[in-house]
Image (cartoon, rainbow, N blue to C red; front, top):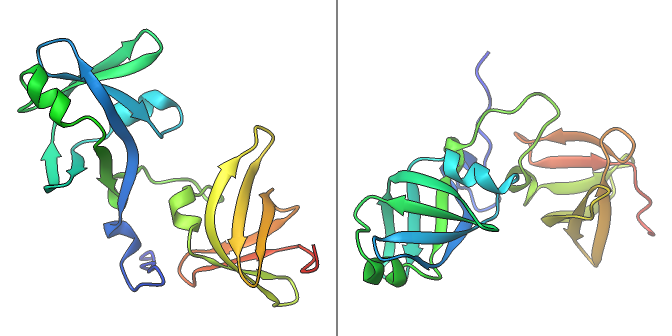
Length: 180
């Protein structure tokens, strides 16, 4: 059976979305290496994706990651075409992006945060609470930030609070009191 294509509220195909997975925080050495700040979990997963689409004021440019590694408390990488410190410095502050279709396929019941953003959230009684704006992790569990007539913080606890996620219909059903 073919998987349904999921679309965001703006009509864009989910698989074609550009996702930020980190940014370049500086130059490392004189041979064009860059320092990285990863937004992936674990942080070294940023090195698993190819190619990177680095965005700056001039636009989006594709780079192939030649090598990357942990250095001290952070990560460093060597990119194609970035052969000196000046070029590495020019990339400082730029976001590192990939397309949604570059992410690995997940098992049933697993979701990337980016796929949950923009979903309509409703209760078991069909009361619409709003849409998922973003998520964050508390250490104990992930939390959905739902924006509707007001902001709600709803724990993403599968089966106990989050009952169903339907990416094709862009809907998430929760067992949640609308007054809370």
